[in-house]
Image (cartoon, rainbow, N blue to C red; front, side):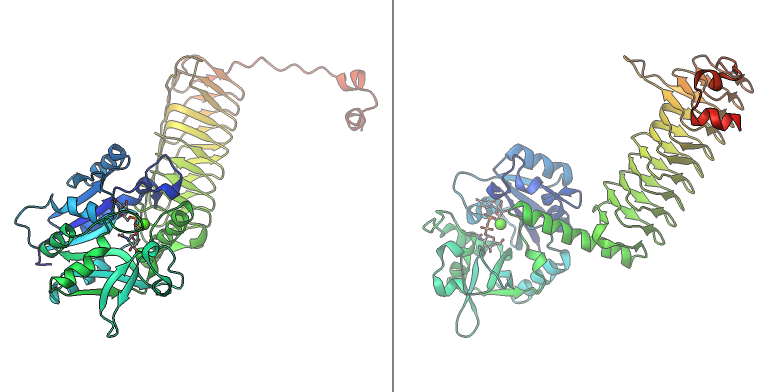
Length: 470
Ligand code: UD1
Ligand code: CA
C-alpha cells in the first residue's frame, strides 16, 4: 500500500463481563493473549506506526504489548471514558505531519484478518472517504451499535443499543467496531464529540455524522463472515472465538498437507509449525512453540508443549513438555516427559515411563515403567522395566551418567550420582550406589535360597499346596 498508514488498537476497557482478575485482552485463544493476535494483524498491514491505548490494568496490558510487539507506541487514556476519547488520545501520538489513513482495531476482536483490512483500506483510499467502517448483518444484533442508513441506502450514523429507539433496535446491520479514517477528518470530528449519551462516554461512532457534516464521504463495507468482527466480552465468547480460531488454524495445516483426523478434538496453538505428511490423531493438543517434522504421527490423546519432534517420530497417548524427540524415536503410550528431556534418533521412551532432564542417546530404550530424572544415557543402551534413577536425596538433586550399549537390569535403583561405564551390565533388582566400570556386571542382590516343601508344611490344604503336589 502506497498510502501512509497507522493502526490504533483500543485496549483500555475494563472487560467487566469476563469477571476476571486478568485484563480481558490478556485472556488467551490459540495459546496467546487476545491482544497479540490483533498486534500481529496490525503488523501485517505494514503500518508506519501502531498505537495501543491502555488504562485498565495498565502495567499488565502494556507489558504484554511490549513483549509481543516492542515497537508499539503505548498511550494512556485519561479519565474521560469511551472509544472516541481513546482514539483521540492515540491520534496525538502520531507524527504531526502524518496525513494518511488510520485503521482502528479493538484488542478484544481477535479474528479480524489482514485481507479484510486491506480491502477496507483500499476501498477507503480509492474513494477518498473520510471514514469507512466494517459492518455485518446479524440475526441477533443485541448489544451492538446499529448502522443508520437513509432512504437511498447511504450511511448516516451509528446508534448504540443503549441509545437506540424501538425502530432502530430492529436494524440488523451492526457496527463491527473496525474502521479506517482519514487522520485529519477524524481529528476534527473527535474534537466536536461530547459525552451526552446513555453511557456518558465519548463515542467514536459519533464521528460518522460529524465527518459527513464536514463534507467527506462515509461508507460501510459489509462482511459476510461474522467471526471477523466477533468481540470477546465474556467467557462464552472467549470459548467460541477460541474454537473458531482453532478451526481456522487446523484448516491451514490441512491445506498445507497435514492429516488432522478429527479437527473437533485437535487443538493447535498459533505458533505451532507442522511439516507436510504428518498425521495428527484425535485428542491431540499442540501448544506453544512446538514444531513437528514430516512423517511424524502424533496422538491419539497426546499433549505437546514447546516440543521439537523429528522426522517420522511416533508419540502415542503421552504428555510431553519442553523436550526434543529426534527422528524415528518412539514415545508412549502413557509416557510423561518433562522439561529438558532429549530422546535421540530411533530411541524409545515406552509405556508408563516418566523422564525429566534426561538425555537419552540414539537407539537407547527405556521401554517400561521407569523414572529417569537428571541422567545422561549414551547410545544403544537399554534400561530394564521398572528402573528408577533416584536423583533426589531428599535435599538435593544429583546427576547420573550411563554409557553406550549398557544393559540395566529390570527393577534397578540407580542412586545418583552414579556413573555406569560403556558396555556394563547391572543385574535384575540391583541397587546401584557405586560407579560401575565399563564392561563390568554389577550385582548386589542376596543369593537365592530355596526351602524345599515349605508350602506343604506351612500352607497345607491351599490351592498352591495342591498344585505343588500334582
Ligand atoms: C463498540 C461500538 C459499537 C460496536 C462494537 C463492536 C462504540 C461507542 N461502540 O461497542 O458500535 O458495535 O464496539 O464490537 O464505539 N475501549 C477503550 N477505551 C474506552 C472504552 C473502550 O480503549 O474508554 C476499548 C475496549 O477496551 C475495547 C474497545 O474499545 O477493546 C471497544 O469497547 P467496548 O466497550 O467493548 O465497546 P462496545 O460496547 O463493544
Ligand atoms: Ca466490545
